Image (cartoon, rainbow, N blue to C red; front, side, top):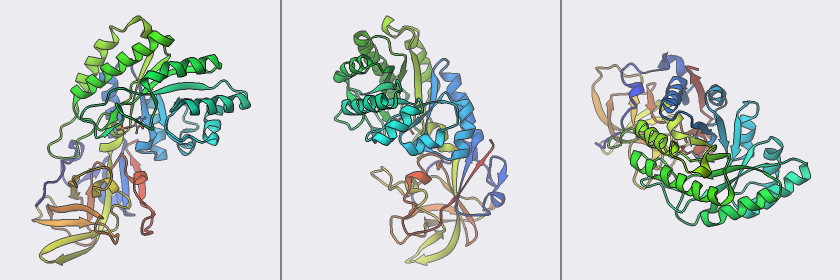
Length: 400
Ligand SMILES: *Cc1c(COP(=O)(O)O)cnc(C)c1O
């Protein structure tokens, strides 16, 4: 038997319900992603409690499901997008939008500049293209400089700083770029500094935010007070049994102390934190139905109607070195059902398609429903949906 991740506390207790809805109600079509907006609203409220006066931006790439974006819009201060496709998704939601990401095409820059979106510039050459496109469109562009920080977020699942990077302009070249875009007449919106992702250690985030503020202050001494500094995010969520919830009260307290003692060059600057995974990751459950139950060489397999084609991360094939079991449950099991050790696999003809490797679960049969937790961020849109041609899963937002 292999250990399984911990089911988020929002879902403990059987029979499983999501946002007050029964599994039978939610699984008319399987596979299905169900997102509980009550959990997202709770995370937003926790953020507001810990980070008074700091703007909250949602990183759309974590989960771009339309009804979810619409429900979040009144509760966040901005959306961070990374493509023209995401720009279309947030159009009409009446929130500040900023556009980061390398490789923005001329067409994307044109659409974003005309929509008054702030472009987080990833390079000097992108700045030149943005200025030329804005000039042709007759628009004063809103431009911020994304800085490749000269440090990294310690303990981060994905390191994005302290090294050569496709993201942002190296810190020692950022001031020169600001001067260039200001001289060209652009509306300079400030700095975007993102040092990493999926960190669970509050001390590492506190350290990274302190270094980010130091870097912003050094740059501001050079080029003047930025209207906004986007401090990045990187708040992680616990997927596995040895991982703990991140202490955002401690992070908020440390940031408040720093913001209360800002150097003169940052007085009047607004600060934003951009989060994806931490806001929505725990709110999603992927429900897939057992199609077949089979034995092979003494091992029992539950074969489901969906797998890595929809929830790649749970199969261990999205940015992990060692495959570990995500938290899963038999959503339709009676609380007192006998238990057994099984492997839960999807329908794809590849051994990579495994949602649970030798986990202890209540005995299940064809027709039962498997719940894979922690499916709210980097789920459907981060998975190879077209691989093997199975139908798209449904998505349902509850509790909005
Ligand atoms: C992906 C991304 C985020 C969101 O990261 P999470 O780990 O999901 O919070 C925020 N900012 C930028 C620039 C990103 O690329």
